[in-house]
Length: 227
Image (cartoon, rainbow, N blue to C red; front, side, top):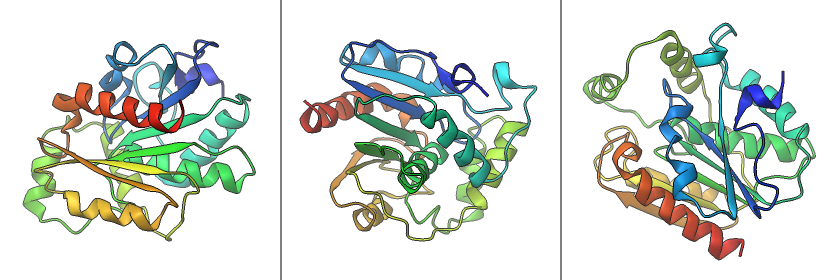
């Protein structure tokens, strides 16, 4: 297991003052963040987290539960000594990974994130939604083995109330049938500094159309907290 497998690009500008790690939603891939490097200032170096079992890693087994993913991610972060502050951003399942990785890193005695940014995910998991709402969301994705594995990660998650020791900022779609904006208030109980929820037009995958606006807001938050 190498950093190059998990992080794209494998190396970042040593002059950047902040690192940003991006986690994709269930069934997605690193391509969803392909434009983000052009949306960020040179002071913020971003790396997309590339999970096994997809694209160039298609020969590797897909993981269907959270713990094995976290164990391998902790190993990657442990092998990447870097004293710069860093931010974890994720959308839907990606936000679950960002949240639980932040918890796992501190539990392992490693430097935790300076900020977690969670989009379209509540720390309590997906609220009960109607079958029609779930079907509508799933219909927006191509049903692949990777999506099936990621859904198993999400549905198998059981909230234990774990808290982060860094600020959290949340992002929500105004018409998200799975995670309404109000559900994001649960983040206030998981962090010493809840920075609120930014609401954008769109459904569960609002980041597709609002990626530029979300990135701009995140940059502002990062610059305010890590000048």
